[in-house]
Image (cartoon, rainbow, N blue to C red; front, side):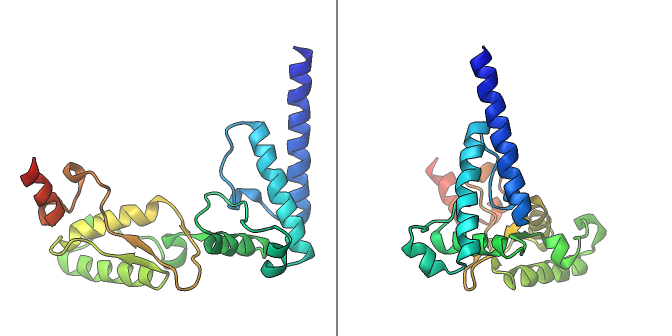
Length: 198
């Protein structure tokens, strides 16, 4: 029992020391990590990230770091080397790693606050704003603007977006894979084909 308590105490002290090291560097790991399942895993994650942060501070050159074995930045969630390096370097430079629609373009009105003409304009404005940030929106043809707007509002308010590598994009198509729950079902050829097959 004493050994277990001592181990927990050491883990907690190690965790506090790692977090102080990041504070000294002016970096907050929360922007490039996800919560770990237990303190030992968190410490392991922070140790690797700290090694990377110190290496990058000493030599902020990706090509040179890769030659030294620093190939895949330990960011979570990891996507691909280009996206992960982009996020890691933004973080190291003190730049934000993600953005929200509201912070960039202001809050969206509720669908019930807009008449049919306004909702069409607002939908087009939101789609254009997102496209300018590498987020492409493409719903099924024929879906009413009010339904598209309501879905898109919920989607952009759900979670922050990553800052993308220049030239990259993400796609919002409204398809979650569950046809019975989908707002686009009456206009979707795939859903109609599935219905015929059943």
